[in-house]
Length: 227
Image (cartoon, rainbow, N blue to C red; front, top):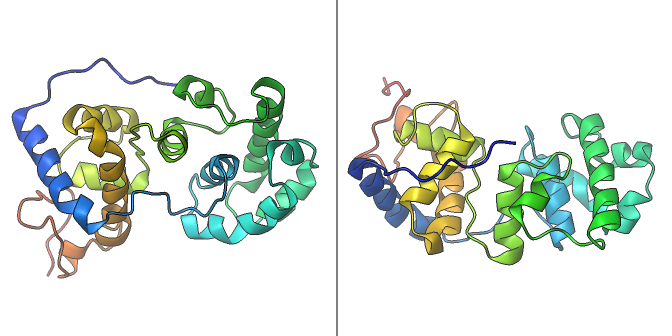
């Protein structure tokens, strides 16, 4: 798993642009919480593992039955793999994700006293957990500043010109460098909402003649003008 690179000095233009985007988006999307439905850090961890290449809505439809049967690491660790697959079969890659859930639950029970770890390093050792998952869990469960670079954040960051290639680790490092620590989590969630609801993959607002709060200064990289 790649680690963040040492800090490098950002250009003044990118630093100003990041601050400007944060000033606009955070008040528009003030709910700095995951869109996944959960009632414990364990449920959040499982939900984020399930969310890879799957929408939050699909995960939220599948997890109530899963968590009713397996509400904690002990119950999940003792479940049959076929039972877990049955609860999440509507989610993409459910065979692999069921293995991740079972293995993760057993590690939590055997190594962490059935608790979700509260450090990046320990979370990254869990099956199916990358930096996106770890950042989301840490920010939601411990209050640590989190930069959750999912597909929506990555797409918006690239269209805004903050980074030139699909590299979530580098994008996370850039955002951490350019945004104050006490605004990182809020900015991350606000940029996620912007990418999910406004700067969509196939029909971004600016390309179909709809309003965008960043329209006056976004370079719209990779977006064709509306006809």
